[in-house]
Length: 156
Length: 156
Length: 156
Image 1 (cartoon, rainbow over the protein chains, first blue to last red):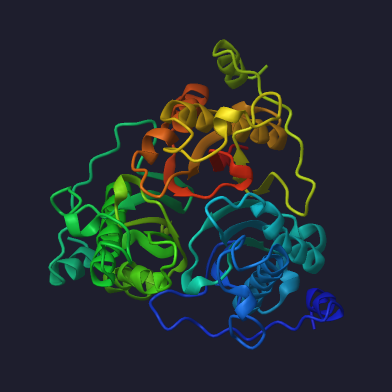
Image 2 (tube, each protein chain N blue to C red; image 1 turned 90 degrees about the vertical axis):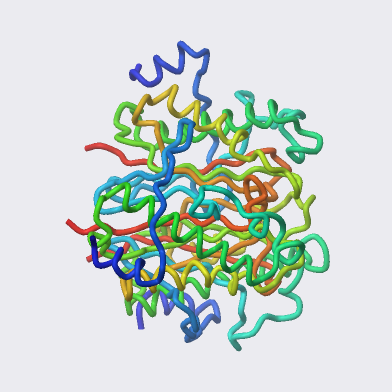
């Protein structure tokens, strides 16, 4: 087990085995040292969207639930990285996360919601998890509360 | 004619000759093997937005029209790639597409709309067309139904 | 003083000294020749959001104010580049800007707003400032009128 997965295990997190989308896109593409991860929704370990993670943040979804949803997205991003490169210890850096929050039009604290994803990335990867980030409020597929995409630098 | 353009021709698609934006940005930038394509709207072969490709998806724009609009965006992305590198056979991989759907706030099937772009990319490029993807609902310039941006790896 | 900063000075622009976010993300990450800048809000030189740069573009925020806000975002992007690489003359190219406009649902001239950022980039960097670009309307953190992210190629 990689050091990163041991750290995740100590946080009580087991990476899910993500299912590839049944479509003409793929969950990740590697180009040289760059690894691009498709936008991941806040599916739980059971592969489902919890009722508390569906809907508009600032409307029916609370800040705390939205933050937890962002954390799930980050876990799902890491699960895709593992599928792509096998060993999470090969991550040289999380370069960027893009955070898409399914927010009410007047919702302001989007950054706090996205911290749920950023915190997980640093808990898992340490300083290699410190990333550039853009966070915006949008409409997310399937009415999921949060979607997160990623870009990583892979060593070797 | 490149193999990719022959495949497009067999689908009845001729790439448009895109006009560069009259502004301080450009339709594409290459950096090493990376080629970044600016967000492309769903202009038709005549360079115009059809009435059916203007407005909110899930509102006045139907799923089928939106999917066709996403396909047009992908065609326009490829037209810019051709302008950038001359020969579409030099594409090593479509790394990523970003899909921006001009959707109603409660519209859920955004992924199905974006499949119109993803399908075109694979029809044109085969396995090299399988890309990472993020899809969100937003407000699109000029009230276009769909905007798609791209990132490609170029060989040689 | 770098040539780029002399050009900015001649435009009456002094780059602010940006404060790093108090969170687990960072304002920039470099990976090889790529430099990725986190989404920057339209804070003024005093580090604050002016009342005229807060709210929905096409609602309480006018086109002119929104364009000025986009320009501020671009200045803040350059300030982060300076923090990252020290000398702005090392910029080989502004590869891409992502423009996020806090717009009313039916606001169409998003591109014109984003020109405020694109124009600044070319005023500062000349032809190296000509970038690929995607512009969309979204909900921006803190109700800022505009957010701009960047990707640059760094020489040497």
